[in-house]
Amino acid sequence: MNNTYTLVIARAIDIFACTLIWRRYDLTISSMCGLQLRLSKPALWARLLGGMLNALQTNHCELAIAADSQRAETTLQMLGLKK
Image 1 (cartoon, rainbow, N blue to C red):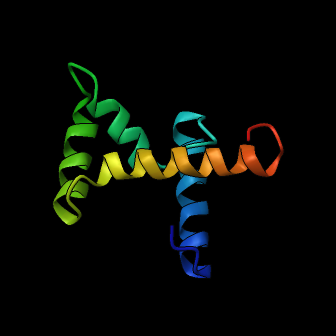
Image 2 (cartoon, helix red, strand yellow; image 1 turned 45 degrees about the vertical axis):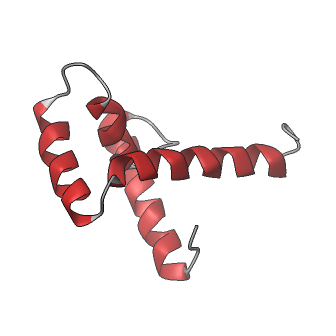
């Protein structure tokens, strides 16, 4: 995961926006979109946004879910809650 200052700030804004919209403080908008796209009938907003994001980067939403999961695992290890 790239952790340049600019990307860390962008990720923080993304997570903050997700918190405001869905009250999920642990995910990015891309991950929320990806999780919605996994449903049998995803919402229209997810189909539209997911289509745009996945057009910019192949499999973007699934990669975002993986990145959010890895970030959570790293946090648990840092806190000593997981080895």
